[in-house]
View (tube, rainbow, N blue to C red):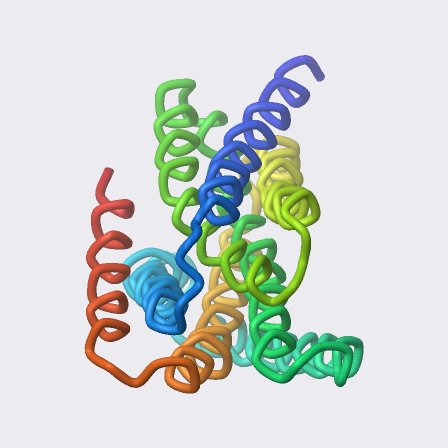
Amino acid sequence: METLIKTTLVGLFFGTFGTTIGGIIGVTFKNTSNRFLGFILEFAAGLMISIVCFDLIPEALELSGLVYTIIGVLVGVVAMIFCDNLVKNKYNDKRVKNNNSLLKTGIIVGIGLALHNFPEGLAIGSGFGASIKLGYSLAIAILLHDIPEGISMSVPMRYGGMNKTKVVVYTLLSGVTTGIGAFFGALLGTIGEGVISICLSFAAGAMLYIVSGELIPESKSLYKGRFASIGNILGFVMGMLAMNL
């Protein structure tokens, strides 16, 4: 029981600390130009594509094969479409169009990150089951790549009209699912590979929808220049680096 609690707390700390740092960095940005916002949104898109391509999908395929991975991806996409519609209805016509759209994008990104952080927590919990060194290595790597994710969530929320305190609180909450995942990973120990694969591919589908349905369209509506595309490339490279730490 003591080991279970410790593992859960480690997952909770490392998961929330990274996203919170990212949230704090995001709300301190002072440049509110469309060029800057477009760059940040595309950076987040590149980061998420990299995580999907080099982490979530390969791991899901290795664990349970193509069929379960495709099912998980499709379910993740459908779930995010449902969440997108809920958020759109809630915030419709409450702010000017650009701010409303940015706020919705930030909320959708936050939901996607929360879903993505759950299988990361599973990895931490399972890692500690194998060895303490592996568990902490995974936790530190997850903390580092949660920082830019927190930024990608907080910037559109902040410039969509949400106050700084709420933005930081929401970025913190998006990391809580890492602790929940660590709990289940430690509790089940040798959790079924099919279950982990579904969780990973579900998160991949959610992130693919966020990239193609939210981040890139919103970026292009704000700024159409090359600077945003450079952000996408840099985000992709950052994701590759994070995956190989």
